[in-house]
Structures are given as structure tokens and as C-alpha cells.
Length: 343
Ligand code: AHG
Ligand code: MN
Ligand code: MN
Image (cartoon, rainbow, N blue to C red; front, top):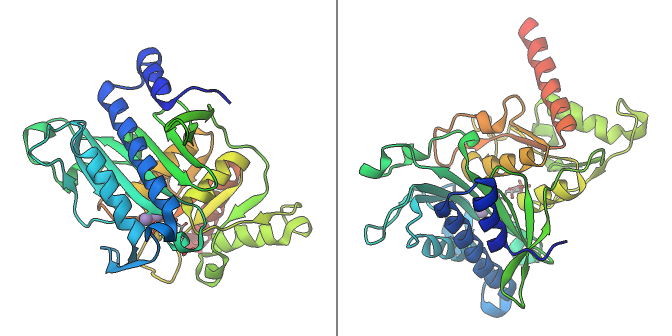
């Protein structure tokens, strides 16, 4: 535990590590400030009229919660005027949001999931905000920004992170120099570092997957989970524990702190869709954090950050966490593919 503020950490990253251009530092400060405001809204709950549905659907056909829209507005308003962004994109908006002409335009692109795990809002379980930062392609400054400018692999991200609104509000961040955690100090109104250089603890036998989809999974995923369920009596020779919060932020946070694996794989409910989670503002930022913490993130076969981006709201299968466990799931996919190819 240190007392270092987020501001000081970012200044040091800029000065000593040369990891952080000034505009990116400003961007992260502003996202963090927006997350502070979202945290306040989340905490108001029923007393502030924050709970419940809005009565609308987003572009993905999901019911929008009031807080989905409130958090989206907070992020847009906080980030549009600073001069650091060329455009934003969000789970809650079909199209990109270019920086309005009345403000100076910067070189970065910001993508976010304003509230992740929205189904948990009304039952007071942790939700979060996920964000990813890309650089606009060279030459984009002299023309209109469009969605194609966002079509970059996750490997090009320059920063990523999430805020988690749980018993404490935390910000977990990477700029490519490790993973850092900050807690919101409500008395001071500032973010204070609570952990530096987070690495995923090894050998914690915990897996996170929505078991109710078991019958829809592909054989390699069933094989992995069957072996976990067989525990000491099965191929793994040890017992596993299971957790599923239905907030990716909370599940990924647990993995960063305690180890294990998280999966939302492709399943046969929607065979043409590669998965449920979204590549650009859920899977990519989490993959960046998980890799920076020594873990791995695959879609089952391909490294998530190497998946080609073709659409803003593109879906992807997600297998992430402890590198050895993820490699095992990938190996099961390879073995299965080899068997079906030779059959
Ligand atoms: P969102 O609330 O942004 O739509 O994301 C919810 C996601 C993710 O957080 C979670 O892991 C998953 O959906 C839960 O899905 P199930 O309800 O199918 O388990
Ligand atoms: Mn989400
Ligand atoms: Mn969401």
C-alpha cells in the first residue's frame, strides 16, 4: 500500500518511464474523473432514482438500464472538451461520437462499456466501467474520423482499464508498463494507489463460466469444465471451485487478485455469433490488462489482441486468466480441431 495518487503515478510514468505522452495522461485523468462521477451515481441507487430500466434498447437489442445511459453521458461530457480525443465509441451508441467541432481535436480514440454487468445494478452487486484507448491512424487529423479508424487490433491499444464499483471503488489501469490499482479516497476525492505491478497469483483452482449454457458449449469447453468438475477423482487430480458474478469486471478483478480462469466462449445458442462479449470495449481492454499481469487471453484459438477488428460492436469468444489454464483450453481446441479434420 502506498499513498501515491493517480496524478503522481501518471506524472512519473510520463517523466521516468517515457511511457506516457501528455495528452494520454490528460485522457486517463479525465476518464478516472468520469468514473468518480459514475461511482457517485451508482452509490445513490434507489434514493437517487438510479435503479431500473429506461424502457429502451441499445443497438445490440439489450434493455438499457437508467445507469447505462447516465454513465454513457458522464463519459461523453467529461471527454469531449479536453482536446485529447478524435472520437469515442460506446456499447450504448450505434455509431462513433467524433469530437464536436467546437472543441479542439486530439489524436486518441476512446472506447468504453459505461456500465458492465448492468443486470447486477438493481440487486446491488458489483458493476464497472471498462475502457480502451487507441491512437487514431496517421493522417486522420486532416479528415473526418469514421468507424474504420477504430478497426485496429487490440495489440495496438496504448492504455486500458476498468473501474469497479464494489464495496470499494477501484481503478485498475495499464499503459503497457504493468497493472496498477487505485482506490477512490472519498474523503480526499482522489485515487490512491493500492497495488503496483499486479501479477495473477498461480495455482488458484477457480473457474468462472455461466454453467447454465453447458449444453450449448463446444466439446473442448465441456472437456475443460468436466475435468474441473471431476476434481480430485478426475484427470486434473485436484478440486476446483466455481464463481460467476455476471459482471465481467468483477470476475476479471477476482482473477487479477486471486487467480483462475474466466470464460465466455462461443456457444450454439447463436451459432453465427463468435461469442457474447464485445471485442473492442470488453475483451481487448481486459486482454491487455490480463497479459500485462502475466496471464493470457484467447478466443479459444487466437490471441484476443490479434483478432482482426471489423465492426464496432463485434463479438468474440473469451477465455482469459492464468496462462497455464488458458493454454490448456486452447490445446483442447487444437486437439479437437485436429480430430475433426482427420475424421
Ligand atoms: P453488459 O452489462 O455490459 O451488457 O455486460 C454483461 C456481460 C458481462 O459483464 C458478463 O460477464 C456477461 O455479460 C454475463 O452474461 P450472462 O448473463 O449470460 O451470464
Ligand atoms: Mn459489458
Ligand atoms: Mn454495459
